[in-house]
Amino acid sequence: MGTNSNLKVFSNDPVKFKEYVDKVVRIKAIGNKVFEGTVYTIDPVCESIVLVRKRDGETSVEFVFGHAIQEIEHIGESLFIPKLFEERLEPGIDLSHKREKLKKWLNKNMIPIEECEDKLVFGDVVTIVPPYDIENCLCTNDIVLGNIQRLIRSMPVEIVNQ
Image (cartoon, rainbow, N blue to C red; front, side, top):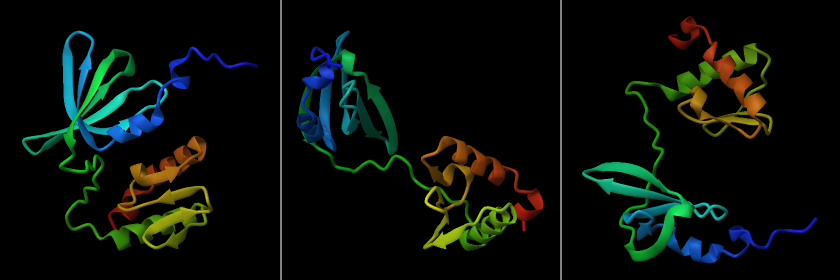
């Protein structure tokens, strides 16, 4: 089975793409549109770019699709390393208490959970990181992830509010 060498993915330069990451760029796109921001990442297959912009203390993310890009110009070094996903903890939450409640609930449901530093781990399959909510479950198997999240979601209110 041969490959189609006419596909753009076989002729693009991933090293060149990597040079743009964490740099401030100006992108000229079809329709005379211009985008400026810090390159967060580039998809080397479709050549789409994720730009992060910071204005008035607010961070925004913008996607520029590869098929629309006409020119990329490096205009400076990034003044900030964008952290897009910040953990926001509710004030007054005792994480160790929350971790223990979740661990007991999972053990009660025959899930052998172990503690590894501040994480809860189920074999080499699932890791639950602080603040121990359903969106903090890490797993490469979607079925297992869904089952663990469903189990956490079903934890009785009296256990959650202890």
